[in-house]
Each structure stands twice: as C-alpha cells, then as structure tokens.
Length: 443
Image 1 (cartoon, helix red, strand yellow):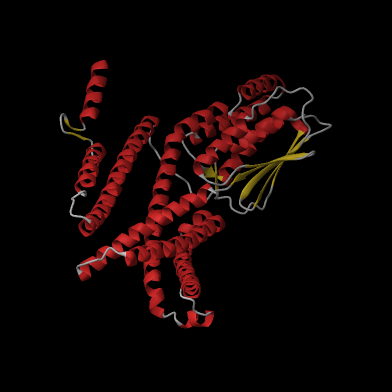
Image 2 (image 1 turned 90 degrees about the vertical axis):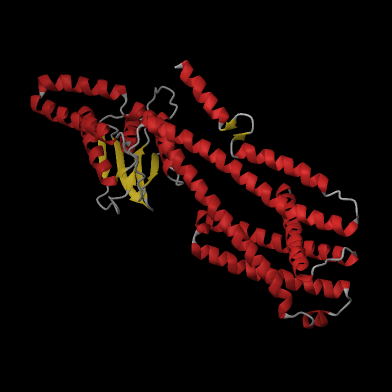
C-alpha cells in the first residue's frame, strides 16, 4: 500500500512537471496562455493520462526487475523495456481515449474507436519515450555508482576479511598435533618424518603465498588440499578416506584461498575419525559449484561451535560475488557448496592505502551527492518559479512571485554554498583546513 502511494505521488509530480513544460512550450510558440476552466480541464486530463501511463510502466519495470535482476542493465533487456514501454503507453492511451469518448462525450464504443487517430498517440508515446530514456540513463548511472560502491567495499573490507581469514586458516591445535606426530615419527620412521616435514612446510608456504590474494584457481586449491590431507592421513592413517573427482569441469575457475583447508579441518574437528568408522571426504563439482561433502558421524562429546570457519568463507565470498555459499545437512551427510568464480578482483594496495582510499571515496561520494542535490534543487527552481511567475502575471497585479523567488532563492544559495564547501566569512573548505590544522597540532 505504501509503495502504491509513493508511486502515485511520483506520478502526480511527473504530471505537474510535464504540464508545466508543455505550457511553457505553448507560451513560447503562441505568446499567451489563458488561465480559465479549459486550462484546469487540460491539467486534470494531463494528470489522468500521466498517472495511468506511469503506473503501467512502473509495474512493467518491477516485473523486469523481478525476472531479470541485475541483468536488466544489459542492452537487450533495455531494448525490451523501451519497446514494452511504448506498447504499454499505446494501450493506456487507447483505453483512456475510449473511456473518455464513451463516458464523458456519450459516444458508442464503435464511435470511440473510429474517433481515435494516429496523432492522438504520437504525443503521449513521444513523452513516454523521452521519460523512459531518462529513467534508463538514471538507472544506468545508479547501477554504475552501486557497482563502484561494491568495488570499494571489496577493497575496504579486504583487510578485515584477510585478518579474520588468517586467524582461522590453520587451527593452532592442528599445528600442535602435527608437531606431536612429527616427534613420534622422528624415532619410529625417520623417512616418514622427513616427508611429513616437507608436506608441513608446503602447507605453510601456501598460506604465506596466498594470504594477499582474493581468489586462487581450483587446481591450486586442490593441490594444496592433497598436501593438507596427506598430513591428516599420516596422523589418522586408514581412519580417513579422501576422494577427488577426476572430471572437474573447470580447474581454472577461482575460489577463495584456503577455503578447502577450513572445510577439511571442520570435517575432522566435528566428526569421529577411527578405523571402524572412517571419515569419507569427497570433492566434486556441479553447476559451477565446488562441493565438499563428508559422512556425518558427530563426536559424542564436542565443544559448542560458533561456526567461525564457515562464517569466514561466507564473508569473503559475500565481498566478491552475489552467489551464496550453500550448506546442506541431513541425517547421514554434511555438504558445503562454494561458488567457482571466473573473474578475479586484483589489487596490490596496502591496508593503509585501502583505508585512506575508502575514506576519500566516502567523502567524495558525500560531496557528489550534495552537489547532485543542489543541481536538482536548482533545476526545480528554474522550472517552477517561471511557472509561478506566469501564473502571477495571468491572475493578479500584485507581484506575490517575489516572495517564493527570494525565499527559495536564498535557500538555494545556502544549499549551493554548503554543497561546494564555500563559507562567505572564512572562504572555501575552511572547516577542512581547520580540522587539518588542529590534527597537526595534536601530532
């Protein structure tokens, strides 16, 4: 209900704007506009047509958004939108013309059809086309800005996400257990100890190499998982079974680094691992997802878990893509599906540079929004004030137009000075200079 009321308000405002523009054009061509009952009737008809056509197109846009989502910004969908907008406008004008001819002028349905001509549709369809193109340009601009904001969030959140990821990449208990295994192997199997040490060094080398990357290839992650599982096999021997599908579709696709390690570690941590009930871990792919599943045999005594590992993976994926990490659990199996991506977001900025750039971007965005708001205010001023001046000229000799012109004008002037950061007493950007000065004094 609230949405419909908002759309009606927007449609009414758009109708007023269109009516003012059309009358300004008429005044420029004919030199006079008579303020009488006929003008009021034209205004009411204008509002009726505008509201109906606007609502028809608004519901059509909503349908496209629900069906195509972000794909609506492709040229193919935009072409469909413009074409559909023309057809909806044609249909709305036809229905309204028929309605007016039958109910207002008392014509029959056949007469109403016969009285409609091509020229009756050209004006509304032209206006609808212009408005559709303006809305399309606006949504293109808005989507572009949202994409930039998302990109900046990826950059700004990268430092925090990396910090959380590195904290949880290798459980300290894993290192402790690995060193215990190594200690026993040194005495019992020196050659095995040497292999174990080599694998352990590869694991930590991989961690150091990948810590600055958002994404790595599936092949790299699988190779690391093989190394990691070899350590687990040394520790648990035949109590763990590890299977990787030989038919992975796209090994060059990307996943977040060390996601497999976190999931393998979770599987070992939360399940019983013994020769009688071996833990079976399988890695496959399906529908562009890398799937890690294991048989479910939970430990009888287990500390409460807050799901830090899974939360870590979800957070990093959330910063990089709209595709979600999928978790499925039933009585016998636990399965996690992580998206395989095809585009890597690369950046080599330090954490300090990321922080500074993010702050600068936010401040620049605030300034742009303030300037954009000022220009919107200025546009409305330049459209409405002339309309009010014309209305004043046509209706009375008292120059009441002075009051809204000066009142709104002073407000517009203050808005402009605020948007562009100009203070008439202390000059431009005085506040920023003063803040910088005080900060330097504190240092």
